[in-house]
Image (cartoon, rainbow over all chains, first blue to last red):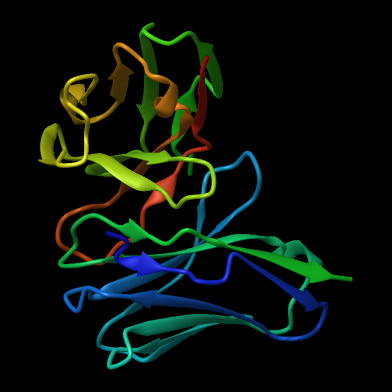
Length: 111
Length: 115
């Protein structure tokens, strides 16, 4: 049972434009959400997080939005850069317990 | 600050053989995780330690997988005997732990191929 879903396996965006990566979850008890970035042959690298008490968190070019009623979160990257090309995973946890990961979205930023 | 260290990076074994992976977490991190990532899927938790105690091993195939974390620091994950479907990347991660909202930091992973 996949509790965290990323329905878009891949996304291509022109350099300088906005990249929007989406994630849906089913467990209403999730209270902490994270985005990880993964390059080939490397482990996932933490990117940004958001607690369920917020609906937005921003860090430089990266912004995560949380819509609890829709059980949906999204990652916005503005402006997108070629170095952002990677696989992005969203993850969620409840009460500090294990992280559940989505299947990932492969982002390609075209120069 | 040193990251999470894992070894080996790659391992190829025949089915029914045994294999062990090693992980050294970030210093001071109480929580250690082992994840299995099969190609095309997201990481799936196998086992979670808090110091040297097991917090969650509900998804660990205990008939063939075992893990230990001696002295609450390093950890080893063992598979005995291996099956073809165990081919995956095994990721170790650590976090400050407790009930706080802290992210996990991952190692580079061990890519296991069972032939």
